[in-house]
Length: 280
Length: 273
Ligand SMILES: Nc1ncnc2c1ncn2[C@@H]1O[C@H](COP(=O)(O)OP(=O)(O)O)[C@@H](O)[C@H]1O
Ligand SMILES: [Mg+2]
Image (cartoon, rainbow over all chains, first blue to last red; front, side, top):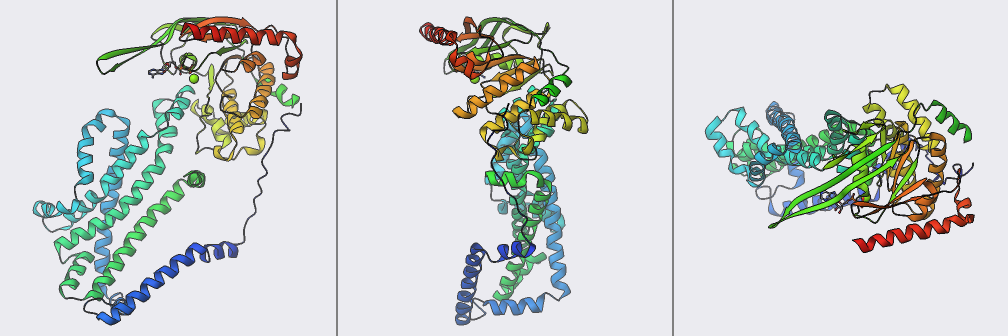
């Protein structure tokens, strides 16, 4: 009678922390302290070295900061930023949609995987930068070759992770689904995809970072367009302060894109994200 | 607890179905180097399970026990022979059967209740009904407090309970269990056996239970089929009174005889291979 009640139930207590405690824990953690100190150390070293070498060779953080204060209010800066970001966003969305679809198709249909695998493997190892000059030859200097460069930089990672995610679908869970009468469509929606999502999002996060790289490489090779172009021009003029400022801007763009993808990932997988994380 | 079980069986419209296996064979072929290798996982296996009977299949690992379950579940087709559930030949999965797997096979992204709901969801039962039904079986296995937990927040025994609740929620005519307690520690295993006994005695569903533990087979079953490589080599009827408990078994003089017999049959079969 009572053996079921006697079932050992682990005691789990949950207590909501106050907002200030949460804030304090996130700002004042030991890890955060180490990170901030290390960055500060680098900045100080950079400053000392820069003061010694001079702006011409290595602009110290203070010069870069001054350049930032000069540049950021100009409309020129914002048009560069807009041009580059728009290209990245467009290229990334195309790569994400195409990449996920191709990856899923490869994971689902063996023949598609067999057909595409050699191309994907090649695409994975070819340094995309080597193809950019070809794109210029084929598509000219307009917007499209830059967007195509972004797509090429980002898509292979996205394809491969989506493919891996679908392929890694747990055979056991597939059997469970089938044994309970799931149709192929239900299997895909309720078993395969939830299992593949963490992979797909990991691929999108990497893809977002690579999209930013793709854009800047394309712009550097094009010269005179977007932020990559600005870096090129500044370097030609030996303005290391401006080069560094724009490198920082590119970094900020990259981190923002990755964070945006991560945010979408969190929202999408809110329900089991935490438990998924704990597992890995 | 008794109340709960009565409610569950009162709302339970299912009755067990008989299961008949006729000449089941399952051969796997593959080419290894210059040889064609044929594995006879099952070779002409026939058996008969009466409605509401609890039959265990016992045998060393690799003898084909899981293959029987997979064929009965409709997950794979036998090379030859057929398997009938309530006179209907099995052509694929169906809601007259439900399976409890050895690794519980819970969906890690679903909470306990949503795992139990899964088969009902697949069958297109509306959300309110399926949640109510799922809760009924979650309570039955003693996990009411854990409905919103994720599988990895549960112990192995608790996960296996969820697997059991999920299969029971289908209200199957035949419950297939493939070494469901094989991965559990001794204490959890005993508890699960006790619970399964009590639930089954109220549910009147047919059970085919795979195990490689002799004591487990004796405690639970009406009949034990002893398997050797790909074949059923012997059948032992467990003529112990019901309802049973572990305690009754220990004090019953027949238990030892049954253990000896099963032990001998299992050992004898080793000589054959
Ligand atoms: N897909 C398969 N291909 C080839 N051989 C298999 C396959 N599945 C199972 N077998 C073989 O069939 C035999 C029986 O397997 P199984 O039914 O899992 O045994 P048990 O559950 O009794 O341990 C084993 O020898 C196993 O290696
Ligand atoms: Mg097995």
